[in-house]
Length: 396
Image (cartoon, rainbow, N blue to C red; front, side, top):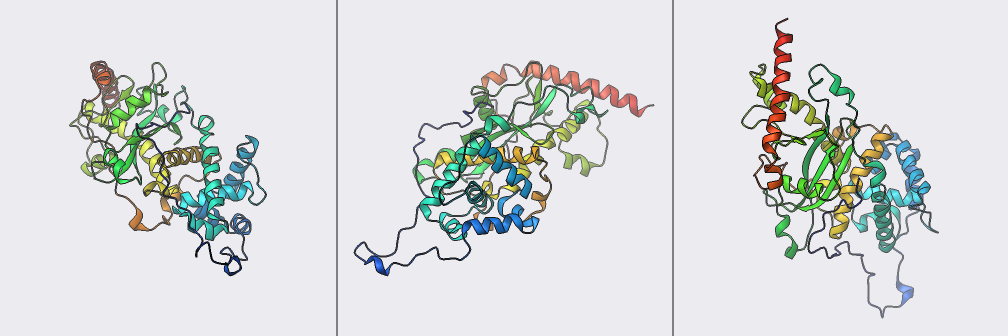
């Protein structure tokens, strides 16, 4: 994946809302009257050790991964020389600070209390780990395999989707911005968010991330920008997309005006009536992988459900770092199911209501419009062959 994953806006000046608390009292106050604030007998290092050696659920709840995955991440960051122990803070504790913030959307003050360090130390190590994890992007977010996934070998998909390499969707992630920067990021639900394009394979791993676009941007526009900044579709292959995108040879969308969502099919309790309905059903069954993957991502890292008080570029980097960590956990055989059954340990009032992806393509990208006829012919060919096979099997 191209490391230039971030879409930089024209005004990308940093602003700092992650303010470090000041010492109480004036400068004229005698130093002898100052009381140390971090006086807990349980140091940050002891707290981390307690979590890692305690019940297995503690690491999941506090660091959003299993203990063996945590240790593997530490080893990778050390091996790549991306992080090193400091005099006061080990790599384990640095990473723990970062992961705890992702898990709880914890403020600097909360992290100070939890790990017994100054605000400056917390901020510095959070930034260092964020930089280190995003440097792993090219290692863990890789282009999809060109070989058909085993799920595509099932009779209902084979050979019709043999050239499909994954699925794409956009997701909105809340942002916290100063008033004079908010308007472009205001989405159709009138909340503030970035629109992030995510592509995944059928192993529930992300194969591309394009973050930082304003919440008002259409899904198709974000995809078009990704194609201009490193995202590539292998020749002859394609991704499945939803109705918010144009139907092209590289991005196959469902038929418009035709039942296609899995829930709709289930409620109808009837078989597909023609080739379009059958295509949309099979399309939805495969594209469900991106919906599942995004769902797991946001449940595992609750910070993605609420705006965080970091500089703009760090908010964008956090969304990418979470995707990197998701893939790392997947490759380490971490549990992909418990996040959906876990409690989100942040204040429900902090959770921001954001829209799903676009429901319809708005004809706003001319490059996609020029390819739609060829895309329609390709989709029709797949759908009609699939329908013929479906009818033949039913009449045996």
